[in-house]
Amino acid sequence: MATAAAVSPSFSLNHHSSLVPKYHGVSLNSGIRVPTRVSSRGFNSRIRASSAVAVEPELRTPAQDATEAELFSCPICYEPLMRKGPPGFNLPAIYRSGFKCRKCNKSYSSKNIYLDLTITSGTKEYSESKPARTELFRSPVVSFLYERGWRQNFNLSGFPGPDEEFKMAQEYFKVAEGGVLVDVSCGSGLFSRKFAKSGTYSRVIALDFSENMLRQCYDFIKNDESILSSNLALVRADVSRLPFFSGSIDAVHAGAALHCWPSPSNAIAEINRILRSGGVFVGTTFLRVNPSAPTIFRALEQSAGRTYSYFTREEIEDLVTTCGLINYTSKVQNSFIMFSAQKP
Image 1: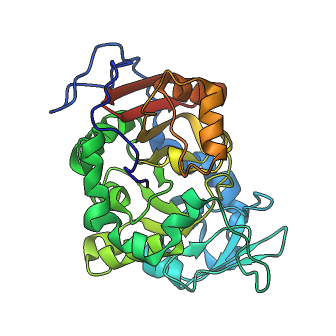
Image 2: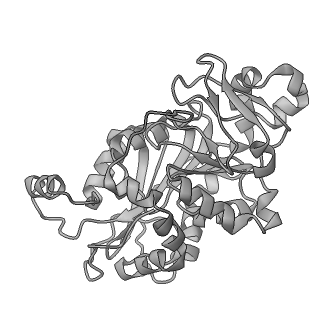
C-alpha cells in the first residue's frame, strides 16, 4: 500500500530488464532471466515435518496433517503454533480457532476477522507506534478510501492499473503455481482477492500491519462466497517479523509497499527467509523522482520528516540482491517499477 503524493507522473526511466511477454501500455525489452522451475506441488512435503508438531494429534488425523499442514509460526521464537478448532484453511475455520506457541506458551487471537500474529498481540498496557508511513494506513479513513479513489491515482505515476499489474505478477509467479502465496502489506486486499479467486495457489495469506486495512479486506469479501470459502487467511503481522517457518512459502507479493516499510532491508531479508528454494518475490513501488540526487541530500530529506522512502531502480536491485535473492529483473514505466527476484 502506498500513496502517490510527491511522485511526478512526468518522470521516465529506461527499462532495466524484461519481465515476460509484452503488456498493453508497458514497453519491455528481452533481458529476462527465466527462473528455473521448481515444482511447488511438493510444498506439503516441505512443511510436513514442521506441521507434524504444529497441530495437536487429537485434533487432526494423519491424512489431515498431510493435506492441511499449518504454516503459522510464533513471531517471537518462530516455533510452530498449536491450533485448536475446526479444520480447514479459510476465514470461517481460522476465525473459530485458537493458536498458541508450544515453546513460548503465548496465545494469539483470532477473535477478530483476522489472526493477530504481531509480537505485541495480547498486550494490555504497552503500546508502540511505527513511523508515520506505517501509522497512516492504520487510520480507518485512509483504509476506507484506499480502493475508493486513493489507489486509482497511482496511474498518474505510471502504474498500469490493478488488473494489468495482477497479470504481470502472475507471469512471474508461474513457477509457484499450486503453492502458497503471501501478499505482504496487502492493504485492503486488492490483490489478495485476485490471487485467491484465480485458483492458482493452494493457499493465499493476506497480510498487513493495519487492523483497519484487514477489516476493509473482509468487508470486500464477506458477501463473496467464492472467496470466503477459498483457502484464504487474513493475518496481521509485521513485514520485518513474518510468522512463517523458514522455507515454507512459494511466492511473496508486495504491491506498492517498499517505500512504506520502516526497514526495507529487514523486510526483504525476512522474505528471503520464508521463501523456499526457487520461490519468487514480486514487488511494485514508486521510484525516486530525482535519481541523480546525492545520497546525502536524500538522507537530509528523510531526517526533515519526509514520509516515504523512494529509491532508484539501481538501489532496489542492490538491496534485493544484497539480501540474498537472485535472478533479479524489473520493468519501469515513468515512476512505476515492478521487480522480481528468486530464492537460490
